[in-house]
Picture 1 (cartoon, helix red, strand yellow):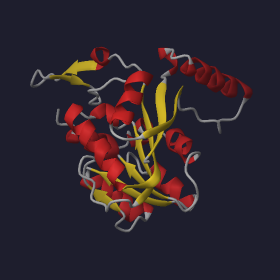
Picture 2 (picture 1 turned 30 degrees about the horizontal axis):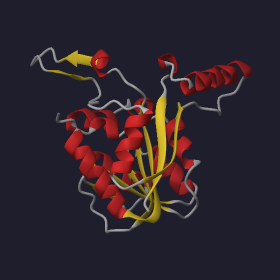
Picture 3 (picture 1 turned 90 degrees about the horizontal axis):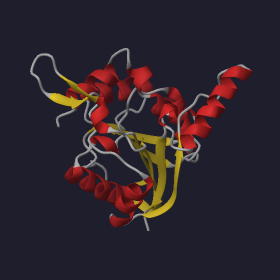
Picture 4 (picture 1 turned 120 degrees about the vertical axis):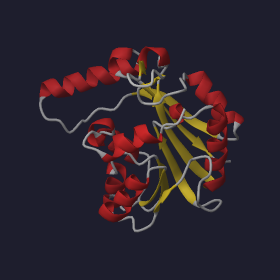
Length: 227
């Protein structure tokens, strides 16, 4: 499935902040230390890059969208550290990064590309470096299929081709040479929202997500290390 047009639109139009909420980007900063060299694969709105720079993280980016990469380099200030490319052919040298972040990426890759991408990430990580992942949990792919009214092609509305549970993600990572440190269920909430009701609502959503309840939009997270 060719997804470039879908993601070129989602990343470069007014919907980008909705599809790639800042709460999601802030979540991952909790697992990254100041001055670590980090590659973000799939740039979205560019919020992660902006927040990472504020935290004094040495951030790099990779994405197939030339428009998104130009925006990141020029507006966020990466000055060439954001590059056009694909996860299965990463244009950085071996052992370059402390951390690689793939948030909501793996579910878009078919089996061959997924395998090649995980091997490439392992290559560009330093020994002891970490891969941080999030994917939708046990997504029913058929439930999100739609049909193009012009050509009649049937496709997942945001290009997902993989569904994951804990066992599958663990097997996938270990079979590609990673040491899995942690896998857990959760979701993305904005704890900065004020008010007791909003806090209680967010807390309930997190609890339901940890139980795998679909109403809470559960996601599967993993941290895996290069041995």
